Length: 328
Ligand code: 8YV
Image 1: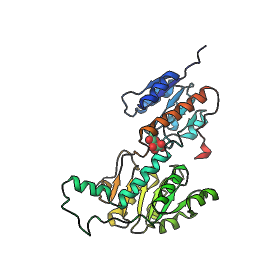
Image 2: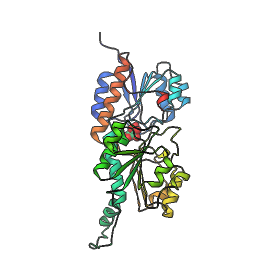
Image 3: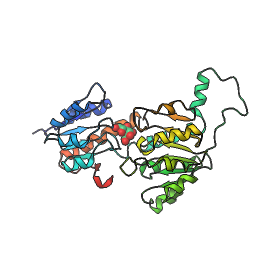
């Protein structure tokens, strides 16, 4: 007898190979127009699906879980971060949440280093000048950036992505400093040559470059608050490929405008997709549209994790990438 196919509603268009495989395995409905689903459409989907394959553009809050249909058992998120999902409310309601860790680590770390280089060496500014036809010839004192080699990188959040950033940064000659809820194992710390700072404040005051690589949780909201940002040195650069909410964006813009810090590279924003207009106008800031995991390979692997999580749940096992409230 063929296996029963669960009703899976996919809230955004996914890469074609992922959609094709899902269609083979599940009774699948895809939001083909690729715009974020409205709250009403999400509520309707949660009323009749067994599985929702969500993305960051779906805000799945307690109210939606409370109103969800009795068939809803799994939200298999396409993405590592789950701050758009009320995991407590889902768990209380008996809905399992999964994510896609591991498969976007290297891509996100690559883009983090790209932002560090772009800001420190004024890469985007230089390219824009050239495209605007303003390159009139080499000069000994023009377009000077800041050297990366020998500087101190302070990584906030030393999980998979933080460690992948550290591995790359070492090759660029940066010394590795990090703040985390707890130190990494001595083996990892030694391999990365990484120094642990229990006090984030002290690390901020000494680092040349700060990279935000922790998840957004109630505990990390505005971790880089106005007070903490003021601890940074005037030549410091801040890079964020994690979540905009971890930095007080208005306070960051204030410091950049005053020249109290040297620059910023941001792939994520506090009120995404809205970007603080003051940041948009600054030459020492490189802004990207939340694209750190945007590779063909990465997005297919993310889809494969979603499928594995749904399949394992279908087979009556515990999905490998389960997110539980205690992890947040
Ligand atoms: C994803 C991300 O593209 O995985 C994450 O947490 O921030 C992104 O890189 C996005 O979440 C897809 O839902």
